[in-house]
Image (cartoon, rainbow over the protein chains, first blue to last red):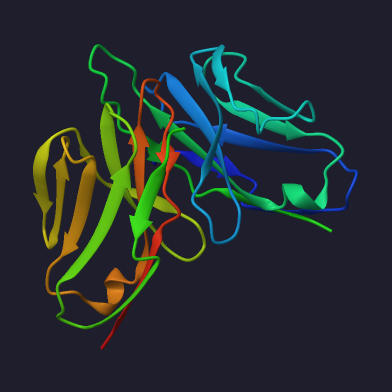
Length: 116
Length: 108
């Protein structure tokens, strides 16, 4: 397994368009997280899944954002009617949830979105 | 409000210098992570701590739970250590709350 992968790595779109990003976690990892990072800032939590279930969503995740993990493996993050403020790096991470509470997260390379 | 603060924001060093980056947080945590981010965005996990001290090569991470403070040390720094170092914590859920990062530049 080569780790967490994300596709595409870069996306340039015009304001108002819809975009979809994909994340493939490490194969045995049942937890998957989405974060957003704007220039010069640390990442911010968006949402996370355990298997297919979306367990938590940030208030940052407006109704234009939707995330799915339909079969408990890969996940998609869709942004509808993109705005210039959505320009950021979108990071995906995965981990194994077990009996221990200290679950290390492994990050993908990110998808850099630019909204013109 | 959960908060994670890092210092300094920017750090410049000469090759060979000992580096310390600090992280403090506001309430009790279940774990603290130190992460490294290179230009282009990829994030690599360096350490995950819940107590004490961990060492990996030239990197050392410590945490003081009572003082709600952690430090990342780099011994014998090298230009390839130049990156952004990010502290992140887990409170009562599994999501990470990140600091804003410390940008380190090591010059030869």
